[in-house]
Image (cartoon, rainbow, N blue to C red; front, side):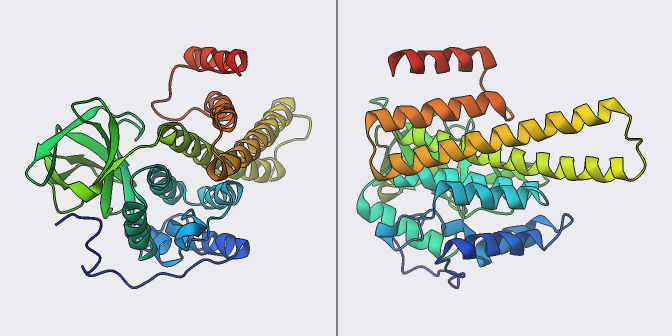
Length: 327
């Protein structure tokens, strides 16, 4: 129970397989068409059915492996109408980016097959980027101890948990829902789960590559910024509609508000595009200089579009300064 390589277990019907850039935006449009009031279960099913969960699977594993810029565009498009669905997709893809840089080829292939079949990942822990949990040997597998929390739109199939062993080496542990107690501590979109102690089979523990955490965090930053971009575009459209609906043209504060919002949109879009291109290159050829560039631009995005629980802005600025000095 809970092993990623037991593919003889029942799998869901295979969702639509995306094969072109146009199909990515078409799939995003299907989610948008559900409207702002669609319930969580409908949104979660739509993300599965339209094939968006699998868009970042590498081509070496028979995936579409679309560019990060296109993924960000799809996330932003969804976020204009459905921020909860966009956030769920970001959470899943961030966990999947950890898989890209972890484990053996057999482990990755097993996970990718499950994702292609429609199964969803949810990153657990402190933003999914800090290995604060511990795991220890437990029979033929490992035991993950200590409660942790994970947010998800609908019920995820796997919780992706970062944890350290006795040698302080971080790993990615995939905990199958149903193999551990998962209590809902906050209902909503997304819901917040608290996981209890779990037994994790050995083949569900993936050793992380050197740059796995930085690249996954960078993708998460890029895609979070894409959700912010979508929300800003929605806000701009609503503000313009309100202004055109009766606000006098000589009302200067409205002019300034709209102008400032447009500058924020253009700046964030440019940063997302630059970071996405840098990440594309690093995923193909992970050189130290290329990885450093991804981290540098992603840090700039974190400053421009902070998320909940974001790192301190002064520390981010200092970090950015150090990367410029050392680079």
